[in-house]
Amino acid sequence: MEADLTLKLAAIGAIGISAQWIAWRTGLPAIALMLLGGILAGPVFGFIDPQQDFGQLYQPAIKLAVAVILFEGGLSLNFRELKQAGWAVGRLVFIGVPVAWALGAFTAHYAAGLPWEPAILFSGILVVTGPTVIGPMLRQLRIGSRPRNILKWEGIVNDPIGALLAVVTLAYISYADPVGGGSVLRDIGLHIGAASAFAIVLGVALAYLIKFLFPRGLVPEFLKTPVVFGLVIVGFVLADLIEHETGLLTVTAMGVALANMHLESFGEMRRFKESVTILLISGVFVILSATLDWELIQRFELRFVLFLALLLFFVRPASVLVSLLFSRVPWKERLFIAWIAPRGVVCVAITGLFAIRLEELGYVSAAALTPLAFAVVIVTIVAHGFSAKTVAQRLGIDQGPGRSILIVGATSWALEFAQALQKREVPVTIADSSFLSLRKARQKGLDTFHGEALDAIHAEEIDIHGFQAVIAATDNDAYNALICAELGPEVGRNSVFQIGASDDAAVADLPTNLKGRMLMKSAAGLMELLSRQEKGWEFRQTRIGEKYTLKDLRDRLSSKSELLAIVRPGKEVAFFTNAGRPVVNEGDFVIAYVPPGGDAADEDEAAERKERAREAKSEKAARGSEGEDGPHPEGLPSPA
Image 1: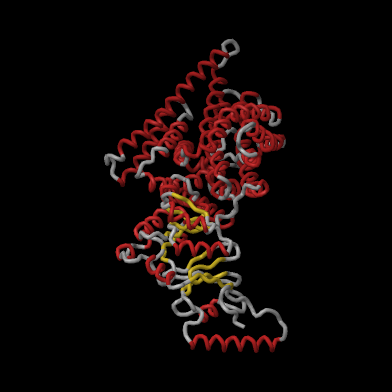
Image 2: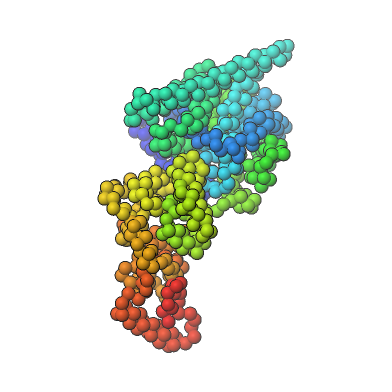
């Protein structure tokens, strides 16, 4: 029995992470793949039956996982983002939620055929668009910061609100009577309002407790993450004991408060929590979708199809467009936000819990809520997940794949290299804390950022996910290594590079995980690069083709010349480093750094090239007018 359960836990983890990996490789929605994996493992093949396998641990485990996910989501909410998205988020919460609740209740009653009480309760739950689905979806999209922040804030803030609306509805159904209905509703509102206020205060108080303990060294480094996790669970459970589902408010408030305290020791902890959250989201979605069984599926009625259609094409669009009426949000972004509303863990978990309570109160029709909730989750994830990118492209807010290069350090060598990349239409941003150094970059028509790069990235003033690579090229070797070490987990260890260490042996001897990969085979430092620049070295570009290979290019360049980068047809850039070289294919452009006369290092090389040119000319004459003799380097003499 124990071995069987261990095998099932391993399978849940494998299915969830495999779905995430396939989504990364293919661009398909990760949530949809996780749902598919859970359905195959559960009702299709019958390998996993979570409620039977985990017994009484099933519901508490799901609730605690949701608490951690919401806390991590709160950690991503920085008040700076509200400069653009604040009014829109407020409108979606204070106007959009009531509108969506009312329209959802009418739709559930008249289209799905639910009695008013279950319809009102269920529509309250459906106002959520949680981080468990919004987060993975936004990770695969490149849209502007405003719609991204609006969707992210709405999803995290609305999660506990949807749960509280269900609590209010259930309490009214349980205790209201025809005579004193109004007073009961008032009492319920005051009770839940007080419980919600306590939950928020508790969350903020726990955040301030962490702020007090951590900087004073009262908690050792190795215990900081466990202490935070422990306080999240304690806060969630305490608030939930006072009033069901208010624990979600506690963990959300705690996360938002910590996110805006800017604790120095929280950077690494945030990355760890992001990894844990990915694991939890993967596991929870697989488990929830595996709970479907054929009996539950058979409860699904055809009239529910009309309800789902109205939810997608009427309720969500109407609530968003009414909320953002007369706002500064452009119409294209409003339409995109109006379409995106996938439901996730909270919707299914809370619906299942409240459906049981409604059945205990005598509402037989509440048995339809669980299959209906699963249908909403599946339909919204599939519809929004697979169409989000297409809709963003049609509306013109999709920014395409992140093909930009971030170069930190506005040195003259970096500026020349940036111009070489821009010649191949690769966008480049130069970041430097010196306004005067950036003046030359602006004069050359390069995008610039004035400020300290690491602070700007951590404060999300620079969207690091929009860059395919980061190059640290300042005059400070230690700072270059720091940039690469800090940003490696964000953009990938294989996507952070730095120029070689000039004279700092300590930096040069650092392990690879504490620095970036050194550019070029020689790993030349800044002083050497500037010296080469004074001697007249320059960047030259060559297109590799069927008749002009990388070997031909190497043969033509002098032994001092260095290959620096390749630009592929899709504007993807790969770099030559001291540790290896990328694969070069036909159609790629190779950027080389060559000395003056680098294509004619000595007379022997010149004679050899002339001989190859004569052979090529003879071969062309023998073939007749067969066409061009192949691509040749830009800036270098033609082989012919």
